[in-house]
Amino acid sequence: MSKYDSIPISNKTKNGMSLTADDQCWLKRIMDRQDECIEQYISDTYDKHAKIICDVVKEMLEDIKKDLKSIHLEIKEVRLEIKDINNEIENLRQRIGDHEFRLGHIEKKLEI
Image (cartoon, rainbow, N blue to C red; front, side, top):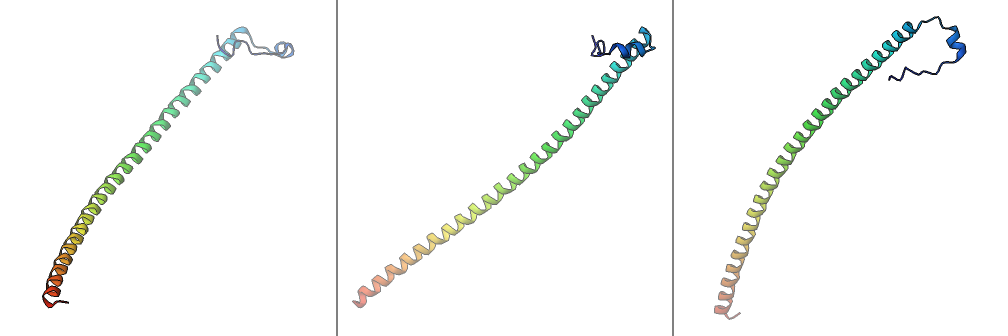
Protein backbone atom coordinates (compact mmCIF):
# COMPACT_ATOMS: atom_id res chain seq x y z
CA MET A 1 0.00 0.00 0.00
CA SER A 2 1.39 3.35 -1.01
CA LYS A 3 1.08 6.64 0.80
CA TYR A 4 -1.03 7.81 -2.15
CA ASP A 5 -3.73 5.14 -1.73
CA SER A 6 -5.71 7.06 0.82
CA ILE A 7 -5.18 10.74 0.16
CA PRO A 8 -7.91 12.66 1.97
CA ILE A 9 -10.01 14.43 -0.67
CA SER A 10 -13.18 16.29 0.13
CA ASN A 11 -16.45 15.25 -1.50
CA LYS A 12 -16.56 18.60 -3.29
CA THR A 13 -13.19 17.86 -4.87
CA LYS A 14 -14.21 14.29 -5.75
CA ASN A 15 -17.41 15.52 -7.36
CA GLY A 16 -15.50 18.07 -9.41
CA MET A 17 -12.99 15.48 -10.64
CA SER A 18 -13.51 14.00 -14.05
CA LEU A 19 -10.78 11.39 -13.58
CA THR A 20 -11.67 7.76 -13.91
CA ALA A 21 -10.41 5.12 -11.52
CA ASP A 22 -7.83 4.15 -14.15
CA ASP A 23 -6.69 7.81 -14.38
CA GLN A 24 -6.35 7.93 -10.61
CA CYS A 25 -4.34 4.69 -10.58
CA TRP A 26 -2.09 6.05 -13.32
CA LEU A 27 -1.48 9.28 -11.32
CA LYS A 28 -0.77 7.19 -8.22
CA ARG A 29 1.81 5.14 -10.12
CA ILE A 30 3.45 8.33 -11.43
CA MET A 31 3.68 9.77 -7.92
CA ASP A 32 5.03 6.47 -6.57
CA ARG A 33 7.65 6.41 -9.33
CA GLN A 34 8.55 10.03 -8.64
CA ASP A 35 9.06 9.15 -4.96
CA GLU A 36 11.28 6.22 -5.95
CA CYS A 37 13.38 8.52 -8.17
CA ILE A 38 13.69 11.12 -5.45
CA GLU A 39 14.67 8.50 -2.86
CA GLN A 40 17.25 7.03 -5.27
CA TYR A 41 18.67 10.50 -5.98
CA ILE A 42 18.93 11.24 -2.26
CA SER A 43 20.58 7.87 -1.65
CA ASP A 44 23.07 8.35 -4.51
CA THR A 45 23.84 11.90 -3.41
CA TYR A 46 24.27 10.79 0.19
CA ASP A 47 26.67 8.02 -0.89
CA LYS A 48 28.69 10.45 -3.02
CA HIS A 49 28.91 13.00 -0.23
CA ALA A 50 29.79 10.31 2.29
CA LYS A 51 32.62 9.12 0.02
CA ILE A 52 33.88 12.69 -0.45
CA ILE A 53 33.81 13.28 3.30
CA CYS A 54 35.57 9.98 4.00
CA ASP A 55 38.24 10.74 1.39
CA VAL A 56 38.85 14.20 2.87
CA VAL A 57 39.05 12.79 6.42
CA LYS A 58 41.44 10.06 5.20
CA GLU A 59 43.64 12.70 3.56
CA MET A 60 43.59 14.81 6.72
CA LEU A 61 44.59 11.77 8.80
CA GLU A 62 47.45 11.03 6.40
CA ASP A 63 48.64 14.64 6.73
CA ILE A 64 48.44 14.40 10.52
CA LYS A 65 50.35 11.12 10.39
CA LYS A 66 53.10 12.77 8.30
CA ASP A 67 53.19 15.73 10.71
CA LEU A 68 53.49 13.41 13.70
CA LYS A 69 56.29 11.47 12.02
CA SER A 70 58.10 14.74 11.36
CA ILE A 71 57.60 15.83 14.97
CA HIS A 72 58.97 12.50 16.21
CA LEU A 73 62.06 12.93 14.04
CA GLU A 74 62.57 16.46 15.39
CA ILE A 75 62.20 15.19 18.96
CA LYS A 76 64.77 12.49 18.24
CA GLU A 77 67.19 15.14 16.92
CA VAL A 78 66.59 17.35 19.96
CA ARG A 79 67.22 14.40 22.28
CA LEU A 80 70.53 13.72 20.51
CA GLU A 81 71.47 17.40 20.88
CA ILE A 82 70.55 17.28 24.58
CA LYS A 83 72.68 14.15 24.96
CA ASP A 84 75.61 15.96 23.32
CA ILE A 85 75.09 18.97 25.62
CA ASN A 86 74.98 16.71 28.68
CA ASN A 87 78.23 15.04 27.52
CA GLU A 88 79.84 18.48 27.13
CA ILE A 89 78.63 19.46 30.62
CA GLU A 90 80.06 16.26 32.04
CA ASN A 91 83.37 16.91 30.26
CA LEU A 92 83.44 20.46 31.67
CA ARG A 93 82.71 19.14 35.18
CA GLN A 94 85.53 16.65 34.85
CA ARG A 95 87.93 19.34 33.59
CA ILE A 96 86.90 21.65 36.42
CA GLY A 97 87.42 18.80 38.87
CA ASP A 98 90.90 18.19 37.40
CA HIS A 99 91.72 21.91 37.66
CA GLU A 100 90.48 22.03 41.26
CA PHE A 101 92.68 19.04 42.05
CA ARG A 102 95.72 20.72 40.47
CA LEU A 103 94.98 24.02 42.22
CA GLY A 104 94.59 22.19 45.52
CA HIS A 105 97.90 20.41 44.89
CA ILE A 106 99.62 23.72 44.00
CA GLU A 107 98.13 25.47 47.05
CA LYS A 108 99.35 22.62 49.23
CA LYS A 109 102.87 22.89 47.79
CA LEU A 110 102.82 26.66 48.20
CA GLU A 111 101.22 26.30 51.61
CA ILE A 112 98.47 28.76 50.76
